[in-house]
Length: 341
Ligand SMILES: [Zn+2]
Image 1: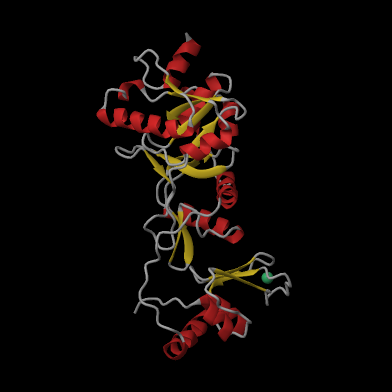
Image 2 (image 1 turned 90 degrees about the vertical axis):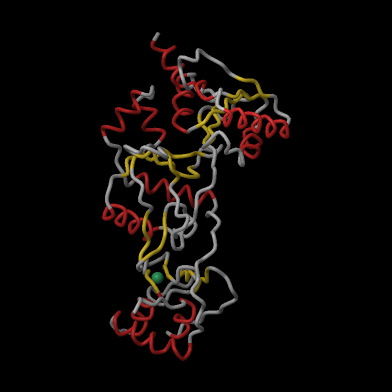
């Protein structure tokens, strides 16, 4: 028989807590464990978890019931199981719908905490130096290394879920009674919004043949949330001219080598859904398109350039193409060459 989960609100009520169910995703109540009177115990209806942001008591519906009744976890589980036949509605086996990502401030807080728990490997550091970054820039940009292994990821997810609500944070999902982390490992690259906050994380996968870059995403996972096509902003955000390119590290490198020019880095040549908002937020008045030179002849990239120009036309911001010696693929490669020449 499979492990059964129980609806948190029903269980909280069954354990004597005053809980109203008006269909919200979160219910906030006074915590019975620490005597908090500011409703800092959160009940999450989508994961059936609870978390007190005062005493940090947390867990699932069974552990809430066990803690309230003094039963062991096992006995609490069986009592709820017997009870559930009589009193709990039997929801159809549900696959939750695609969830919206949490707001930027919540994503930024979780991602920054996560980066703070991780090292940067010597190999990744060397590789970033080779690409043209300095030690100082590497430190400021916040790249980190996520190693291999489920144990490491589970440990990270446990540390973060003790401090944050991970619902809606792309890269995390909930399975077998705990928060988990998506499985890709490699170099973690913060994707920053126009104001510098971390809106998403791209992973440059080590030794990947295909899909070298992936988002930290929980799409398709239980209680997981997919990433969106967030745009990375690098350089001096007060500048009125911006260069549009593809890929966050490329923009970080190019911006550093041009003394802080503003770079707007699409996650893919076609990924323009957030371009309008990003340009508006930055109040840019002139843009340059600087996709990789070697791709310019491919029909897909030509189509993408047309799409980009249409998108820019809507904003009314003039756009010009930036070209350089095609022996150098990306604008960053060209700038690195020019610097060392
Ligand atoms: Zn508490």
